[in-house]
Image (cartoon, rainbow, N blue to C red; front, side, top):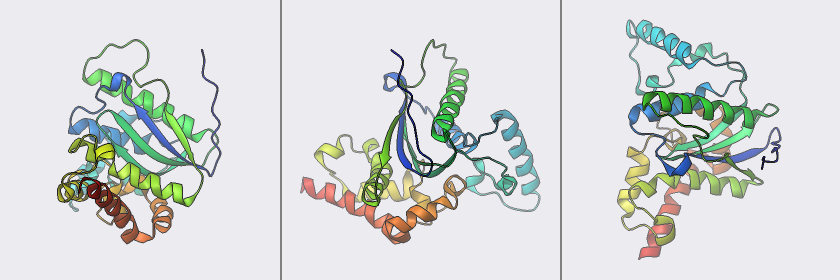
Length: 247
């Protein structure tokens, strides 16, 4: 049975999740994560996107950059030729987190059908990359049915989702922590603050990681969270609370 077409409103914020079918891996190695991040940036564009051509242009930019300027770790994915950023953006990306078999995105739609178009571009583009790399022949869907979307109705819900998205990676070192609590508080905080870089958390407490993705938009969410200090405290306080359950 065909799905009813969903309507997303401009200016509204939605928590989006998309998962690989059968809970299989979306990201098999570090290059896949970089490609996933790169795709989040590039497919946020109403214009046609050629990843191959964009990567070629970036490669040329980096060669020029090395002649006079050192490249940063971030340049692997979002080098700054995006002074030449000509994207016609579909959404504002407020937060994100890439997990081994699924993705969390916090999006504000800024163009009619922006969320649907962005997710269609991301889903089809990344699936083509993954299937070509791993020589997978799949008939039907690569992702699990269609993406899930929850409308964020107020600041309290927005704060909760911010914490939820950025604490998701704890499951990689403490499975079932949401139900059973956190056994090693220090290890969990260290993991989020210094080790797991495939999310927007670093950028939200001024540790530049992939700043080109959330750009100016992060200022809106930073204000809601109570500044850089508030962003970090909200996440750490929740982790501490889950650790106290064990105690």
